Each structure stands twice: as C-alpha cells, then as structure tokens.
Amino acid sequence: METQPGNGQQQEPAGESEAQGSQNRSAQELMDELNRLGTKFVEVVDVAWNSEQRRRVEDDLRKGLESLATSLEDGIKKVGESKQAREFIDTAEDVAESVSAKMRTSKVANDLADALAGGLRALSESMDRLAKDMRAKSESETTAPPPAAEAGDPQDIPIDRG
Image (cartoon, rainbow, N blue to C red; front, side, top):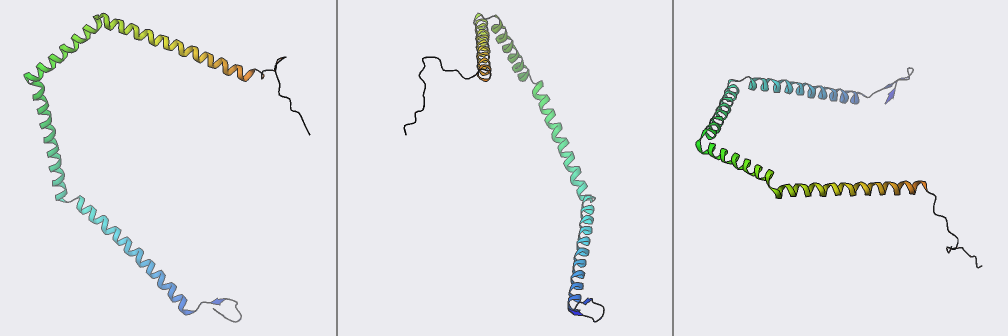
C-alpha cells in the first residue's frame, strides 16, 4: 500500500477496491435471487393450495372416508342384530355366570382361597420379622463400639526381631 505524504493515511491499490466491490455486488445479487426464489415458492404453494383440483381431491377423500365409516357401522349393527350373534352372546353370558356361581359355592375354591390367604399372611409376617432383624442389626453396628478382647483371648502382638 502506498502512503500519501503529509496525511499519514494509507491508500488501497485500485485493484483491491474493485475486487471488494465486486464481491459485495455478488453477495447482494445472491441475496436478491434467494428472496425472489422464496417469494415464488410461497406463490406456488398458495396457488396449489387454493386450486380447484386440490379441493376436489379433499372432497373425494372426505366422502370416501364418510362412506367407509357408515359401511363399517352398518356391518357391525347387522352382526350384533343377527340371531347367531345373539345366541353366542347369551351362551357366553350363561357360561360366565355358571362358572362364577360354581366357584363361589365350590368347597375346593373356598379352600384354595383360604390356603392362599394364609400363605400370603405367613409370608408377610416372615418379611416383617426379617425387616425388624435387619433394622436391629444395622442399628447395633452403627452404635456399638468394636468388640473388646476378653481376658484369655489370644492376641496378635507384633515382635521386633531385629
């Protein structure tokens, strides 16, 4: 870079200034084109969304789904109203009531329920005792001093043989 005498400022060579201006113009042109592209994209989407063809497709889909729902509903009603379906449901209800009644009056079922309840009660009591024992052991370990050696117990005493 050249300096002008007397003002102490540096002057850029003419080639660098033109290159920088060219880069700025290129960047601005790129930004302008991207803005135009975005605007055109919005226009295309708007036209497509508001097109008559899209509305027809939407209407056809809506009518088709309504027709399918109506057909399914009618089919389910017909199956539910048929004599065979009624007989099947009635038979299933009778069997369920019969099994339920037999289970309530059956000595085996009552004995089984009593034995199961007794077993669960015994298990619960055992778990309670185990928890108390573990709690007591934990408390005694944290509060008790280490066991002292009793008289007559052998002790390890280091001996210096040197």
